[in-house]
Amino acid sequence: MKKTVIVYAHPYEKSFNHAILETLKASVDKRGEECDVIDLYADGFDPAYHPEELALFKHGKFLDPKIEKYQKALKEASRVIFIFPVWWSDMPAMMKGFFDKTMLPGYAYTVEEGKWIPGLDNVAQTIVITTSEAPTEAFKPYFGDYFLRNSLDAIGLTPNEWHNCPAITAADPTARKAFLAALPSLLK
Figure (cartoon, rainbow, N blue to C red):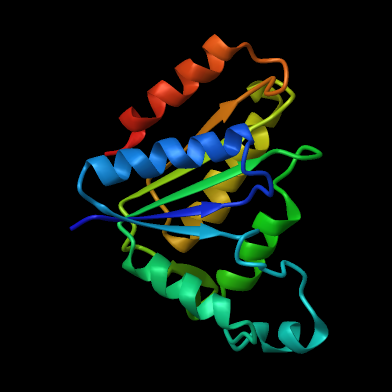
């Protein structure tokens, strides 16, 4: 059975990001597939690296017990979906911290003779969904190119795709509904 893991980072339950989360979770459930949600804010996840944690990084170790739960969920997933807003032209600190603290050496990748070997090649589909104030084209070099092609590819989260809902506060309800209605078709 396929298992989807949704990694979600938004603090407000009435946000459009939350509507995206609910739409995708319902779509996965409707397909009869298992779905785990990692809600970083609800979990009280601490995205900041502290000196004692950073000292463990090169050994692929961690102090936060949530990391073990997150890593286990990702290793069991056949599909991973990331949902977050774009704030100040980047992912929120909560999501960045998730990558910093979860995608550790020996887990998300190993390095052999100077070459990265992906550790999450169990994932058959990766989707990144963002919302932003600025047009999608403004973020394409980062999310569409660098983040997907370098960061996600390096750890085995391929094939991957990015979808953005721009002008989020000014978007009319019809555009938002159309964005939500298209989400189920992303699931392969």
